[in-house]
Amino acid sequence: MTEIPANLTCWVLTNGMAGFETQVIGVAEALGLAPEVKRVAPTPPFKWLAPHGPAQPQEGIAPPWPDVLIASGRQSIPYARMIRKKSGGRTFTVILQDPRVSPANFDFVWAPAHDRLTGPNVLSTPVSPHRLTQKRLAEEAALFAPQVAHLPHPRVAVLIGGTNAVYQLSEEVTAKLGRELAAIAGKGAGLMVTPSRRTGERQTQIIAEALKGLPAIVWDGTGANPYFGFLGLADAVIVTCDSVNMVGEAAFTGKPVHVIELEGGSPKFRRFLDAMYESGGARPFRGALESWASHPLNATDEIAAAIATRLKAHIAGLKAQETRG
Image (cartoon, rainbow, N blue to C red; front, top):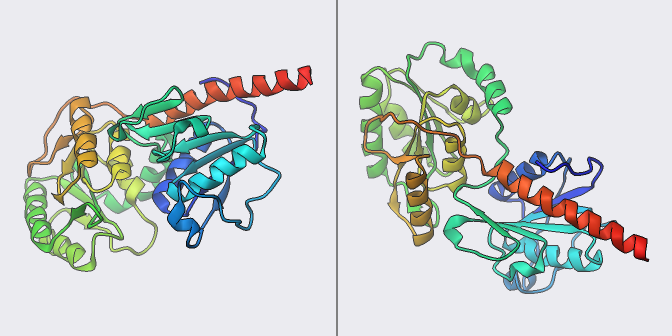
């Protein structure tokens, strides 16, 4: 990757949603920057007008402006435009996800390929950026290894999301999934199951009851989250389709990823899942474990490398301006 100065100041800016923050911090860290986390919470009518309207004054969003700004989410877009303008173009502005305004307003835009966004300063990849690294996977795996030492191989990380605006995890679907997981465990696999906040108490209970007495662990939400530890320890992964980030993090492991397609969907999610299947990074879950030659999918480093190249040219341009001035 193109080297950039280590002393650059960097803000990461979102509305505080975990999915956005994971992406912006992950890219900043991949660039070798120590980001300062900024969160905005505009109120109506500014909230309604985003991304097209002006930025509502927010505490902490003030000069000195950073050298690099990495923002994500509709509410962050007015602030990114404002900072780029008020810094006189000195702040290199990066947007992750489709900004819903012209990419020309910013220095660099990343969008998932299923958004079909194009432009001379736009990069698209099938999977999203995240904070995972091979080093972190190994560290988390070592931390949780004692908890799964009794489980047989193959060990399978089962990542369960839940109902959102696009998909539904009904009790009926959960019961079917529980039976399928029980069958896999009954054939000698060790299951490491992590529900999420969206899974639902009843759905989690259904899974736990289905796996009772079998070689399986179902995280009960207490103590340290074993999500990354289980990913690092897994020989294969089963993951619900409702989170692009979750599927992408599973694909980063380079292990066979089986995607549980829930009820519902959207054209964008369909394009994402189809691209994952075409890449070989994942396959639809058909109730049993499959084996194939998979490879890690890592968008974070690709995005960081593209930013670094443009950022280096941006810095050179600023220096040339100072010399002429």
